Every structure is written in C-alpha cells, then in structure tokens.
Image (cartoon, rainbow, N blue to C red; front, top):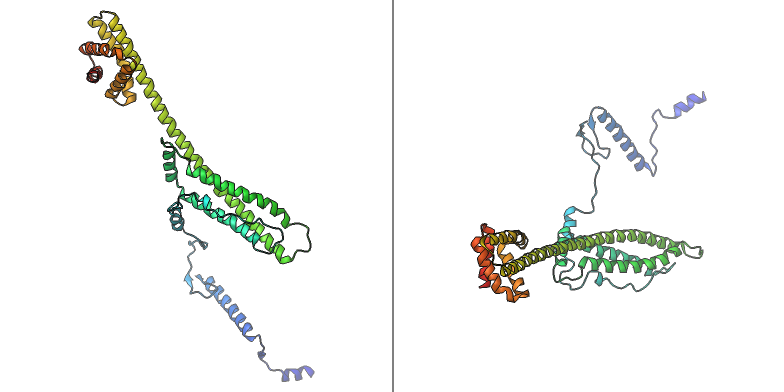
Length: 341
C-alpha cells in the first residue's frame, strides 16, 4: 500500500531539476548526441568531423597527412643568406661583438645571469649570420683570392678564430657558474633557483648550437684554404715545368753552338743536329704555349747568360734552317733569326 501511495504521488516522467550547472549538462548532452550521430554517419560511409565541420565523402584510398606547422620558409632562409654582413663595414662581424661586462653569479636575482645567456644567444646569431653568408660560391671566390699574388689573411679563418676566442672566454665563465646552480645552499628562494635552472638549461642548448655553427665555419675556412693551396701548387708546378723545358732547350742550343763552331760540319751533320734539337723544341712549345714563346725564352736566356754566343747562334740558325725538314723546326728557327736581328 505504501508503494502504491508513493507511485501515486510521484509523477511518471522525471522533471529536470533547475540547477546552476544546467547549461553545462545541456552542452554535455548535445555533445553526446553529436558523437552518436557522427558514429551513425561513419557507419554509413560518411566521414564527420566531431567538432561539427560539414561532412565530407569518405575515400578509403585517401591517406591522412599530418598537419605541418612551419615557423619559417626556405625562401626566408635564402633571403637571410643574401644579406651581406660586410656591407658598409670595414671590420669583421666578430669584431662588432659587444663586450661581456659581468660574469654570472650564483643565486643572483638581478639581470646579470640573464645578460650572460643573452650574450651567448647574440654570439650564436652573429656566427650563424656569417656561416650563411659564406656559400660554396663565395668560398670558391675566397680561395681564388687567396691563391693570387697579393695574398691576404682569409676572412673566413679570421672570423672563425675570433668567434672561437670569444666563445672560449664565455665558456670559461659558464664552467665556473654552472656547478653553483645545483649547490646545497638551503636559504635560496625557490623562484630564484627555478629561474637559474631555466637559464642554465638555455645556456647549455646555446653552447651546443654555438659549437655546431663554429664547426661549420671552420670547415668552410679549411675548404677555402685547401682549394687555394691546390691552385698555388698547380701554378707552381706549371712554372717549374716551363723552367725545366726552357732550360733544357737553352742547354741543347748552347751545346749545338759549341759543336758547330768546333768542327766544319757538313750538311748531313747539320741535319743530325737539327733532329737532336727537335725534341726539346716540341717540349718547350707544348709547355710554354707556342713555338714563338719557346724561341723567345731560348733566345733571351742564351743571350743573357752567354752574350758572346749571339753571333754563333745566328750562324747556327741559318745553317739549320737550310737543312730543316719539319715545319716545327722551320718556324722555331725563323723566329730565332728575327729575334737575333
């Protein structure tokens, strides 16, 4: 009977109770209904965004690509690399670094430690700026400049050396400060220690970044120096080969002049002398660039070292020209006679 009485008093449908959280309950119910509706649509082959985006046709062959959030573009990097750090300045970028006035102090709530870490960040930015400027093409130009006669100190090597010196001084202060952050002093305020730990973490990251940038700058400087040395060696080798070939030709001419003057050589003997001279003439012409260059070099050196043999050389050239068979010897002897007058 009691149960019947209660059923008679209580309504059949439960009425919602008005509370302060009623809007939240309604939003939760709507979200649940939206999810159930989305599940029914997906079951029928329609993909629905749970946040209420318009449904789109489901394509089972389509692969979902993750969203990529980029903080820079390649074009931005290329544009930054084209900014000349030496424009309008006569000194190096590393020479423009401001001085570090104060060393970091343990458990200091002032801006000293923050300025110390900020200095490392500025060092990283300036060294990175120089590294981006020295592209492979500019490294090649620096190598060609270093291989010239007017040799100056390599700009890349000077930048790297000075940046490295600044970094090592900063690192010396860092090594003295870092162990004091985690000491056993108990009367340090919690916010000071937290701030100091955050600065130490950032300083460690900057230390690695500066090392990477300086390593890249060192490799570019070494590449420029190696290429410059290779060019100089090639030039020196070419000069040495020219000297050897030229002096070989001069030596053979001197021997032939002496031999022709000491004997009454006949036509057959002069032809043999001409054949002996053909090899040195061809080698000198190949190394010096032309037959005329070989004749110029031989005449200048022989007359300079033995001026008394100028007339004998002219007589020998006339005699050899009359018996010369090849075009190489004829061109060489004709050029020699014009030089001797």
